[in-house]
Length: 323
Image (cartoon, rainbow, N blue to C red):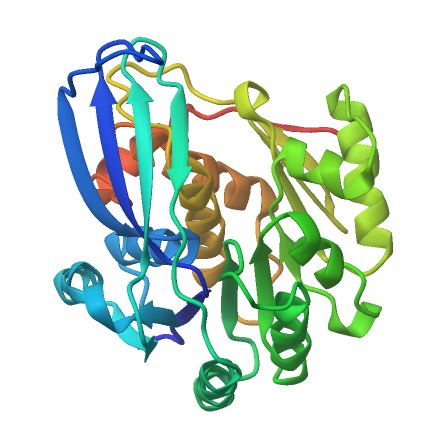
């Protein structure tokens, strides 16, 4: 079996998605659908990777009081469970989906506050699991009480072990990780446009300015910069070039929740399929990422349709060179 992808989620969540025909604030709303899924960005990435057939180890921190939905997901999909259990309950995130517009209103509840001992156990586990060349996805926010530099600390440790670190976070945690010296920076980052603007402290009004910002990050030592652009698709910049993928116009959309996580999973799946030492076909890496994201839109929860449907979507995605 090929080397597994490792995902790390320090702040997982039970995602309760409530769909209403038309959301009215300050009024009684009758739900048309309710779904509860084990989630959190790294868990979502692991779930989509498993659907694609990629071997994956999911790790991080889980509250002991409500582990069952996570354990069921891992068992159902053949995901190796390497989560550290800590006292308390994993948080619940309530997502109110307006079926008329697909706009989502998030209400994120507080969750576990892990001890330094739990974080130290996690570091030891990574030392055991990670090999030279491992793809490791660090994804999501940090729990309350955890230092903003936590992702930066794990990134430095993983780089020393020879891992290719894929980082998907925002705010102070992203600021700290991108302040690392060049030999400790993440290998790939995937902010959305708003997160990148927040990091830079300036607007990015068009694709050209976003490409310029991505190129600046590359010059500092980040090998691959992927930026999701909402209705403008996504772009990928690396040493070999820069490309933009256009989003598909799809029917039967159910939820945009987790589409960014599916994009990350698709990128990682394509990279995982690339032979060691071989330069990835970067336009195809971006194409598969966008296909995962498009496929996810027809599902509530971190799930993909069969591989044939994802491949059909990939063939329809337009990817254009920008420089």
